[in-house]
Amino acid sequence: MLHFLHAAKPDSERLVRELDALSIGDPADRSEFTLARIAREADRMAQADPAMAESVRGILAALRWDVERLDRHFERALQLAAPGAAPTVLFNHAVALERVHRIEQAAARAAAAVDLSPEDLEQLRGALWLGLRAGRLDLAHDLLARLARAAEQRVAQDEAAARILRRLEQAGGQGAVRAAFAAVHELLARKRVVTRRTGLWLGPEEEVGYVHEAWMSASAAAGLNEAIAAAMTDRTLVPEPAMRTITAYAVGLIADSETAPDERLPASVHAG
Image (cartoon, rainbow, N blue to C red; front, top):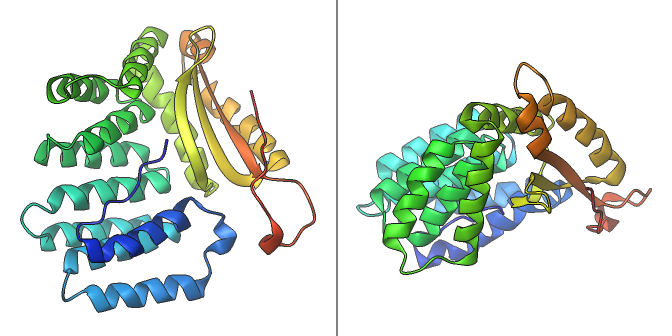
């Protein structure tokens, strides 16, 4: 799953939802006119809510794959955040980093948000899954333990996280898993793959699958999957047990056709 931005104040809710939709939507919809309008809205809110304005600028930088500016704006947002708003800024920073496949940094920022707001179960669960997707099994262990203490009862996604964590540990431990997932995300970042949905799950033989539904054609996804397989099976990164246990692939969302960009629609394309 992808995680969603949090609005610190009700009047920023609409803009946050629009940015969320842009960040996981078809890149063809990211017109410079739209981005310029959002930048002007950030300028207008700067006096009333400077931290949110900087956060919006950071998310706009993520939409342009400018990680340096992304980090700079969120660091400024954290400095300007009102008392009690720092967890929201940190979690939004994590989400923006997730969108550009800086998954380890995203997990670290989400964990920092949890440290400041341990009672926020939504952020706690978000940080847990980011930790798993980064291969940070130590962090996932810690967050799962915190969740057990904070939540009155486990929900289905908590049970799934615990099972996936156990299987990843059996697959080769943190070093192997972290290297494998880092290879995938470095490739996705280099190719600037926009992911609409992503997730980890257990297959029928307890293998761990890691899927990315991406805005690309099925044929482009097939080519990307070859590159993912090559990255993950590099013997300098991933030992044999982990190679047999962990699979990762992209699923194309745009049908192969000669249609114009504004006529493209998500297609139901499955890979296994």
